[in-house]
Structure formats: structure tokens, C-alpha cells
Length: 224
Image (cartoon, rainbow, N blue to C red; front, top):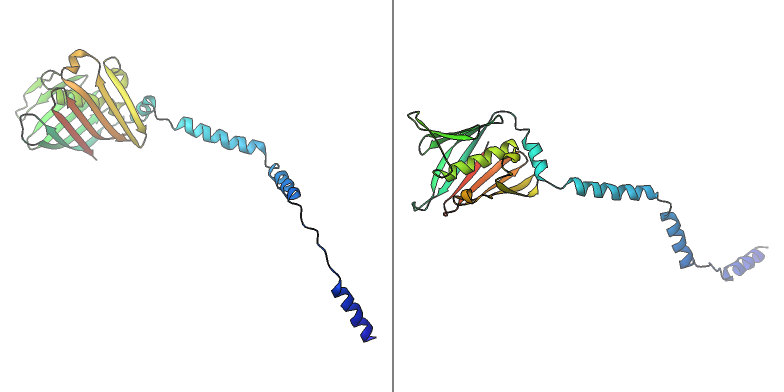
């Protein structure tokens, strides 16, 4: 009996067991079928979101004006300024504070190395010395201070319309790192000012560079 069982077992072991291989073409068809079950609307939604992000991420002058218009309170901004003047062997370094109000007011207080106060109010810039004597500044007589304060106030308030008729405005970059180049279009202003370049991050202006036509320049760095 035991011998019979062993013989049957040997016969089973001697049989060739054949497993039919999976057809490659059949496997590919199955994979394609599974992928095709992914909703087309999902893919379309992803593409639409990417396109929307691309279009809304474009940073325009109107976008900058909108965020800068939020500066509707009084702000105190500290600054350091390097003035490169032709008659000086090295830059004149100034420091002080800007006081800004969106209602047509900007004041520049120089504390070092001397005391001076410049005030822009209703498009007029005045200079007040330590004796409290005031004078009205003009572009012709004080191009650096005149152009830099006008550009700074206009950008801080987002009121670019006040410059569009007399200035070419070029904006580049993104909201967290933008650059604004203001170039005069009138022949009179070009006799004194080459351009004013402002760089910033969102609503904060980090630097103002004013280039005169005669080669003099001013670089102002802002800190809060």
C-alpha cells in the first residue's frame, strides 16, 4: 500500500507543470484601461488652475498702485543717503527720517551731519533750516531733492496718475521684489534729471536712486 502511494507521488512530481506567460500586449491594454478611468474633468481642472495662477501672478503697475494705496496712515521711515556730487572727492553721507501721510504730505528730516527739513505738501516742496526760515524749492535749483521726493511720495501713495503725463513709468519684477524706473518725458525735466529708480518689497520702498543729467546722483536706503 505504501509502495503504491509513493509511486503515485513520483508520477506527479515527474509531470511538467506549464504556466502560460502573461501576454505583454494584454498587460498594456489593461494599464491603459485603468488610466482611462481617471476623470478627464480632474485633468482639465488642474490645467485650468495652472493657467489661472500664471495670469494672476503677473505684476502690473495697477497691482502695485493698489497695494501701495494701503499706505493710508502716517509712517516713519529711517534712511541713509549717499550723495555723489561732482565737486566732492567722496560721497556725502546723510541720515534721518521720512514722515509720510497719504494726504499729500511727505517730510524729509536730515539729522546728520547737519539738520535740514524738506516738506512736500500739495505738490510744493519747501526747505526749512535750523533758523526756521523757509524757501520753496524748484527742479532747476535742487534737482536731486526735488525729483527723489516727488518719486518717493508718488510711489508710497500709489498715485501714479499724477506722473503719467510727464513721465515714462516702467515696472519689472514681482510683488516681493519689484523695480520702478521713472524717466522724464519733457525736455525741460530731462535737462536736470536722467531718471529715478525705486526698488521695493510689497509696500516697503527699500531704495531710491536719483540720477541727474550732469552725472550727480543720490542713493537712499530705507529702514523701518
